[in-house]
Image 1: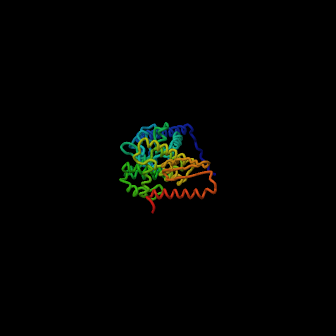
Image 2: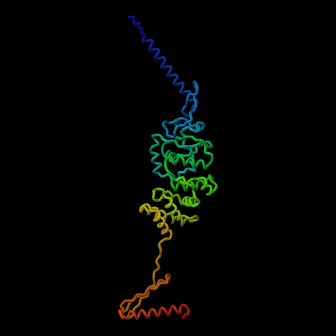
Image 3: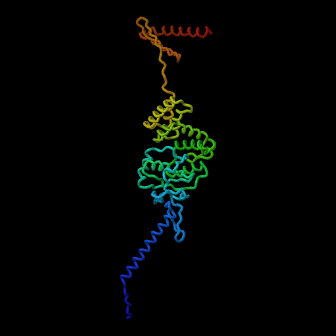
Length: 367
């Protein structure tokens, strides 16, 4: 049987070797951290390119943030804002998108997002670099929520700048519709903004280049409808956006009839109050499209004034009655009480003869 060699262990030497290795590893980690800080002051995630070198990694992952990419404690570096990167951008360097498909932001929506901001931003906004600033494409609600909290920055995924204003609107709309459908009111305001911002030259170009919220082709009458909705005062737009009954195209268009172009300030104030009454009634009664149209029409026309008749009392002995005359209608009503049944035929004949004579003389004599 072969003899098994005995191993002589030196515990003291082994401990020294372990301590030496641990110290070397610690120094290497601190050296790497120092190198990353020097090469990447913005804090973008580094990746090893070669031995001892680091380079930024374009963020190609989905916009949902699994980790914080840039520390708010570090200085913001615009050069780090390359397409694909997710960067924490100071709020004062961000501009909202003037061609956002969202125009109506409710306090409830903004407050809901604001309550989650202290726990971190789950989804980055989208934006691009222009003139030394970050222009948002998408993320208007998150931007507004951040401004009413203690947050000093917004996490933004950087994209390549859109080719033109129309491309900016279409990209923003595509991102927004991944979360919610475009409302009729927001769409109307977007069409107006596209014209005012020069993204399209005229309404004809709107028809050719912009799709309806359902993805169909815009018609000439459709553009006119949306443009009329867009001219309503903002106060009325916001009031109508608060319920499904008042935010339909039919309801919006019907109420917009109260606000033609060229209204004076006094008339506009009166119409504002009237519109708010109509909106309240639509909400309370949950009116359908036909009822809404009828309600608005009746409010515009106002209450129909009834002509008051002129009354002439009649009294012949114990016979009493009256003649009611409606001058504008050309109507005369006669009533006489206390007659005997035997008197009725004679009285009728006398009245008919008198009326015939009057009409004949009025028309210029016998025919």
